[in-house]
Amino acid sequence: MKTENFSKRIQNEFKKAAARSNIAAALIAKLLTYDRSLEFDVLFKKSDGSAQTVKGYRVQHNNILGPYKGGLRYHPDVSMDEMKALSFLMTLKNAVIGVPFGGGKGGMAIDPKTLNEQELEELTRSFTRQLASYIGPEKDIPAPDVNTNSKIMAWIVDEYGKITGKQTSTVVTGKPIELGGSEGRLEATGYGGTYALLAILKLLKKKPENFTVAIQGFGNVGQYAAELLQQNGFKIVAISDSKGGIYVPEGISDIRALMKYKAEKGNLFDKRITGREIALEAILTLPVDIIIPAALEDVIHGSNARDIRADIILEMANSPMTHEADKILAGKGVMIIPDILANAGGVAVSYFEWHQNTRNEQWTKEEVFSKLKKKMELAANDVYQIHREKKVPLREAAYMLALERIQAKWLKK
Ligand code: NAD
Image (cartoon, rainbow, N blue to C red; front, side, top):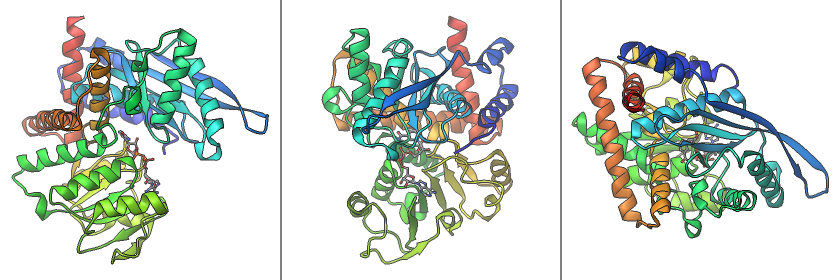
């Protein structure tokens, strides 16, 4: 993950897109600021009776479109710079996918794998106590991100209720179903990226059967993307996770079986799969048509971008390439489907969850997937039109679309 100048890079991308759009100078200036950047110490009790302090963050970038919305990340590299960059991306992503939310992001600089469950709960509850007066169903709505999940969201709901006296689960999304979570949230980001890719291939008049795919990362996003891509006829030939990768040139026959194997054994090295093991970095430079970074930031950089052989990159991870890599790949004519479109399925279903909670509804999985598909197709089509009309890369087109939508709302305020 990034440690330096991540937020500057997003601001620079934004300025480039803003310069090509007809956007008011006052709005550009506003979007280059952050409404609120919170940094605080989170003290919690360890099982051995000692106390530990970690740095906690919540950045509320902008709420022109609606309440701040964005995930909570627990990772040792979490920093104010990263939170700022990711909250800015959330503002843009929410605009691209057309949900009435602004941008936020938060988290703590800690490796949760070093804690037992009780300590993780203590930590999360202490974090919630610090944040309680800044979040709420109409104010700021956190969600899971890297290393956080529905169980952590449930602890936040409970602690928020105790502090504020408001028993509302709408304060977060990504909750367990029995607490008001939405069907389909688990699959949302991976499926959403697949729907966006299918929509773009349709515009290019290309068929999924003709594409081989390599996926980096086999967690929540990578697994469900792989599952739906395979169901739609793509040939998945390589997958990696933090323990290593597998390459099967004739195609991995059963993604669901591999998901089950990974859940049971914690790695991808299923002996029933005939293929070869590959080194971690090798996944990105295999001879495939599409690569899908679905793990970490900055994995495509100046040193490996020239070796990439794929024609399409679907950015399921947030910000998986450096600016230098972006330029190199553009020069090679690689089509990059940018993160703020490709991984927007997660926040789309988070919005569906919030919508169901506020109206006391419970949609079926089929309803959720059908609405998600429509939203992803609409956004992909809108971004693609700008890309064609203005002759700009898809990333810049996505930023331009976001800016237009934010300005339209800003002018009405
Ligand atoms: P996750 O923790 O469930 O999975 C991450 C995966 O990446 C794991 O399989 C891990 O083994 C793998 N990984 C870690 N280091 C690796 C390496 N060096 N090489 C290959 N694989 C490696 O996380 P996730 O929820 O799937 O998120 C993945 C990415 O998608 C993150 O960048 C996240 O910000 C982004 N994202 C997630 C969501 C969501 O809804 N989960 C939404 C938007 C964006």
